[in-house]
Image 1 (cartoon, rainbow, N blue to C red):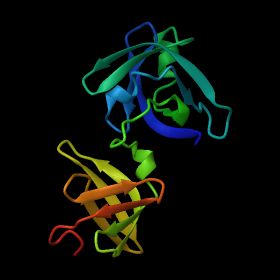
Image 2: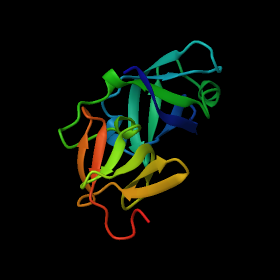
Image 3: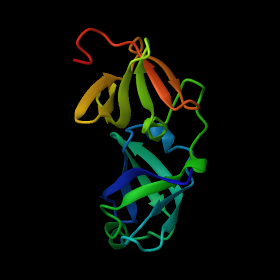
Length: 169
């Protein structure tokens, strides 16, 4: 699939060049298997691949030590940069697990076949995530939870939901 937007470098950490990384998914376990990240220091410029030498998880973020980033000055130059990863570098998921980027663009239907719209984005809330499904000027926020989401079929590019009263009004 190629590169996906994965998170952002939010600030420098310490004096030895570590950076604080915030994954957009909020899932720190997705970082545990990554060996490298990719950033673009200038828009449209060449990608900069940085090897992850060390990682520490702390308060909802990851502290990363990146190869070649050896001072606070080096780290500060990376602040605010979006972080990309190769999808092939991500850990393999179980059958009932999905990466958010897998869900974007799927068509949503009710369990009786009514077309709802296309998954445009996701919202991560502390208690549960929401699918943002759009059709024209309509927008639906659908909890990404059972029993509402009945099936996610990546091969057919669709999500089947069983809406509760008022969800699609």
